[in-house]
Length: 263
Image (cartoon, rainbow, N blue to C red; front, side):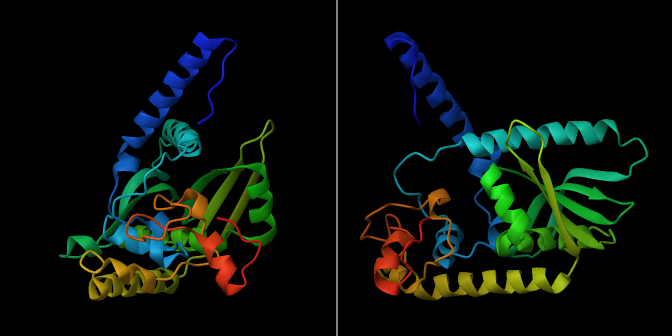
């Protein structure tokens, strides 16, 4: 957090308001969620998912919440607008879906789908992103994590009895003018099933290694050079104790040739 003011008293007010935003964001339902949701399953970093599987204590430090706060506000606004126009029941809006049910609670996967359009049989997910990210997704596609998320929500709609033909991600740029990029493709159930199988393999390895009893076992769980370390709750730069936090891929680059990569 960076807090400034036109004088010392104003700066103190800025700090108080900033801390209020951080505290409120950290205690929102999304922040308090412990189960792995569809948006996380496709994360390339197996170590991050392993921390999540065990509900491992996050690394000390303060995560900047402003991007998710703004994103939450945009989702709420879109929900309000589509709800007001849904008199014929064309849309399912911010509805909970079950991607996979199971008698074992840890194996269940559920989430909230942003929008399903019954007319076009398309499931949509909103992403509010910076302009440089918008250009990246426009040029190179959504990346595997977002693509997997889209198909997992498609599976959730299918499980709810809805026919799904396409899955879509709508990227909206945070800019002084409206910029939107829509990516979509035909729904493929196998993409979702493969992602769930990968998650199960990661979970089983964590259980086999038992890092709670053997902290050194964390080193056997790999990072990934494509990991978005900057946004990881377990990032602890310079850490040599993986039970307290992960140093991130900056440390990986010095050993494996991934020079120039950042989290």
